[in-house]
Length: 102
Image 1 (spheres, rainbow, N blue to C red):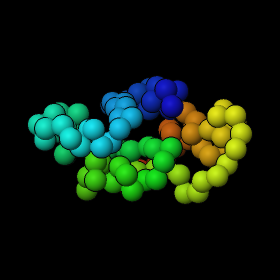
Image 2: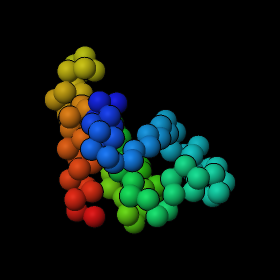
Image 3: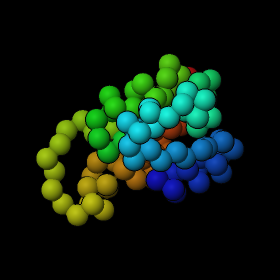
């Protein structure tokens, strides 16, 4: 993912990476804290290795979530990341497409 973020920055796009291993704990924080991490007026691209629905409420009206559409695959994580699109190149493409839509 880092390579995708660096490519976006090289294109002049301001990128902030937020890791939320527990969206439930994040939602339990104060609204002020949540807003400081994910500003409401920002365009937010959420990416999850789980169901996209878990992040939909966090990205807001200006956001988009990209995530798993199916489950049950078994392979080393690097193989799965490549096959399922969790690569820097795909992050770059997905975010660029999202920003072009907005």
